[in-house]
Amino acid sequence: MKLSSLIGHVNELYTDVIASPKPADRLIDVFFRERKYLGSKDRRFISETLYGILRNKRKIESSIHHIENKRANLFSCIAYLLLNRKYSPDSLMSELDIPAETLLEIEQNINSTLPFDSSIESTALHYSFQDWMIKEWNEYFGNAELVPLCETLNTQAPMTLRVNTIRTTVEDCQQKMLLEGVETEKALYCPYALHLKKRINVFQLQAFKDGLFEVQDEGSQLLALLVDPKPKSKVLDACAGAGGKALAMASIMNNRGEIFAFDIHSTRLEELKKRIRRSGVDSIRTKVIQENEVVEGFIGAADFVLVDAPCTGTGTIRRNPGMKWSVTQQMVKELREKQLSILTLNSQYTKVGGRLVYATCSLIKDENENVVEQFLSKEKNFELVNPSSILERYNLAGVTNNKYFQLLPHKYNTDGFFAAVMKRVS
Image (cartoon, rainbow, N blue to C red):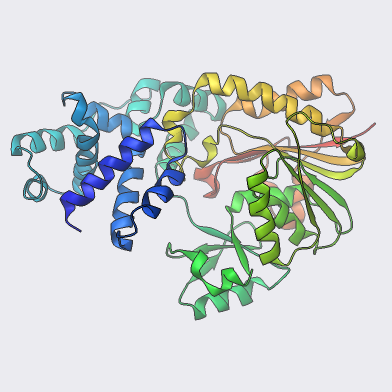
């Protein structure tokens, strides 16, 4: 497809993305399904360009601020292609009906070396984030972590698999994928995780259809290890979604015991049922619940309760860079109240001596420590557990700070995760 046509497709998709509250990856899927004529190279160009625009949106907008509003989306795409000289003005001028002086001006603006200092505003503009996010991370993680975090969040996340040890071993899975022409390497932290050396559509592989692996970030897999459920125990996954962590826990438990996957969205649990059938797991039971519903038969009955609470998802910005612009401070405030309510409600399912794990994929303190500390100030029958005492048998005690479990993308090359482990003592 000609470059001018590809740019037109990016412009159309970008216009849809910034006008919709839905995540960019979902809109991209719909866009491609409706345009089956696009080849794999075309789809790659369109998706990578869109993500590049979203990652650099603030910097791009500052470089084209003089462009008339109705053409701003088109010129955002052009500015990204000129960023770091991915394309030259001459190559674009031969494809597009745009004056050379306009392209040269945009290139000069987008590639100019902006004055950069350690101020919040300068950092936010340089790395294309909202000011309040930069201020939050500077206070939460410290100035030394801020720039590495921003740099990493502006890169593409690795594609990571979780080997389904109910069906195979890590080594056997690697070998069978290699026979299909796919190279993998073992991850650094999780013993069941593999990184793809090259991004491909793994859902077409026979190894996937045979249930040998699931696509799951290494941090998400580590969270399942942190819960550390035992064979024959009763586990409640309170916000199960499509069940990635429930499936991971089933593997840890050798498919023995009971895992109850609760969610208010029936469509997500239907997806989990498909994954259950493919994986060979028979220890997971799904249950659609109503918001704020208390399921009487489970009170005080679970050995392990995982509350993977709905959150801003800021820890997954590498996968969905549109979150840079869709997450607001008001959203954080509303979510914090909801998270505390969900944690409080589901804590009552934990038996005395049982373990309660609260987790998010957020990089916002108000969704993490502040929720846990407010919960513990009211619920005196729970106390914090040192997470390193659980992870040390996997040689992973170093990923905790002796109070909470926290994964930062620039340190561990995972999504950003937070978790608190609590024990019910009375």
